[in-house]
Image 1 (cartoon, rainbow, N blue to C red):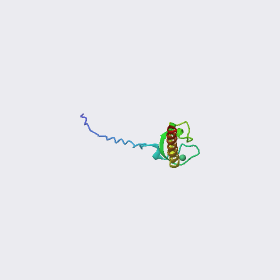
Image 2 (image 1 turned 60 degrees about the horizontal axis):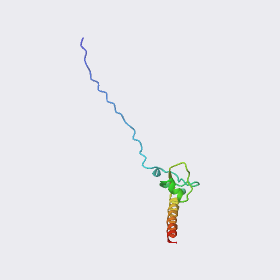
Image 3 (image 1 turned 60 degrees about the vertical axis):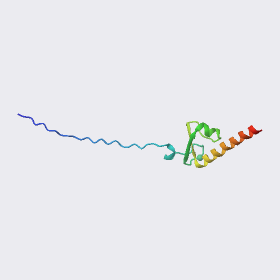
Length: 91
Ligand SMILES: [Zn+2]
């Protein structure tokens, strides 16, 4: 009795689902970190920096997310601080 070898080629098609790459949480609709604000964040900055600008952000996260308005405020405040420093040097 002869056995015939049959080559059954089984093709496995392994499909790996493409994982969505997080290119940054800001683009995914993160909310502003300032307490009481629920607008969409447009910028992420270090928490310490935002705090030093006088904005009320929570301690929980290392990064603070700011909406358009609060980012404006942040910029304004840091500008002011710089000016104050300049004045101090002058006086
Ligand atoms: Zn905000």
